[in-house]
Image (cartoon, rainbow, N blue to C red):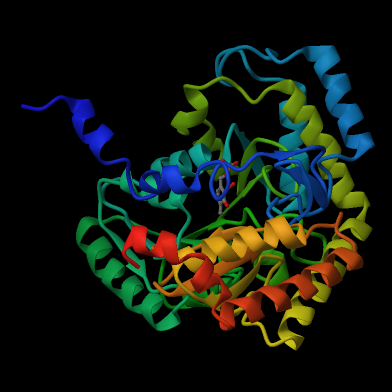
Length: 419
Ligand SMILES: Cc1ncc(COP(=O)(O)O)c(C=O)c1O
């Protein structure tokens, strides 16, 4: 028998194995200074394209003043206990009612974290006789929620209607045998590539198949739709979403999350969401902060307009310069380039050190080998000058990638990695 820790020490996991080359720079980088379009990285000013503060609320003095006053009034302990036991307040209820109205649902329920809340929502919605059908590119929190399920589950090819229908048919066969129902799960916006889930077409399939739809709209909430109610509103099918989920971690620039649905479904979830029943209630500071942020989402459409001005300038500028930005239909802006992992590392270093541009980098195994994905998140705090500077920098790095500069610079790392 071996010691449990032997394996952990030998094998640090798919990402952990890169720690010695990547930590502090490519992973776990430390961005400093107030959250905004320009921050500091290792002492240098950088244009920040890696933070989901879509509407630019994070550092607004009016938002921070409300956060600060809530801390003065309540500290960080209040309320103590789980919602069901002693952690319930009028303000939790008020926020839920306002969130429900904002996303055009009857009722809503707060979650302490999006990730944990989604896991728990899936767990609470299905029993062993039910069948889950979900997108193969689903966020880790959906995958983990599905892992708790004791019944059958089927993945469909990413956003592929034929595959969705085929898997619904398989699910129907099983559900007819077990006497269970079907839960289909999609994201409103897929966070890596920026595509919206095919919600309109999925909802249309309800005419043919009996299933319920759960949508994780982490990136759509506050950014898409006429009023910012998300991908369902954008596609005109908000009513067809049976359980709507969003986190406060992006457009709301905070911590926490919520689900929204018909009253009787929320009433059920309230008594069956294990992550809420057996965990401390969302802190009052976060509840009051969320009420303020939601008010701004409702009353300041100009924030969303500025966000989209930047998104359009960046995405159109990249396309005009011949960059491949895939099929994004949201603020998430992926730029696909061809190159090895060592080349990607040299390129990102050049971007950060010589051009002052900080964006996230995604490589194999998250995307196919030989591709580099630079992921840019525009926000309302960016300026058109930031966009222009970034476009110029991107043209420069593409030239160096194509003329082999990064290959030469990264030869030593390539040899080490056997690339
Ligand atoms: C699609 C999606 N779902 C869920 C989450 C998790 O939310 P939270 O950060 O609130 O745990 C994230 C990341 O924030 C996300 O991108």
